[in-house]
Length: 79
Image (tube, rainbow, N blue to C red; front, side, top):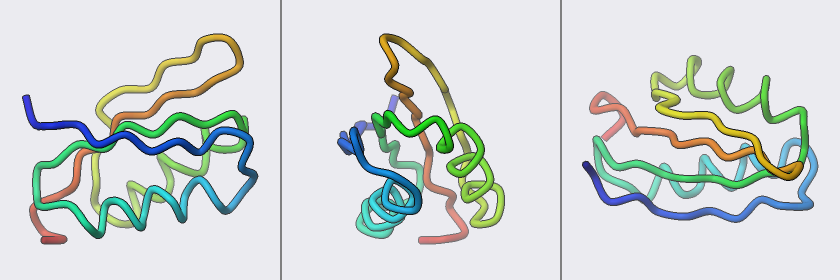
């Protein structure tokens, strides 16, 4: 499995979690995975929508203790 970079977007409201994810994805190479932890429930819609628009894959979504964790894989096309 690819190395997974961590992004902390706790206590940030839209659009900041998506911007933090975008900034990190832009630093990564194709196939890299980014794990982002959020507390804004809006990210359940925003991050998957951003991934669809930009061609990246949501590999995993989990929720625990009011935190939402996404694992996103960068597409090869964006590299």
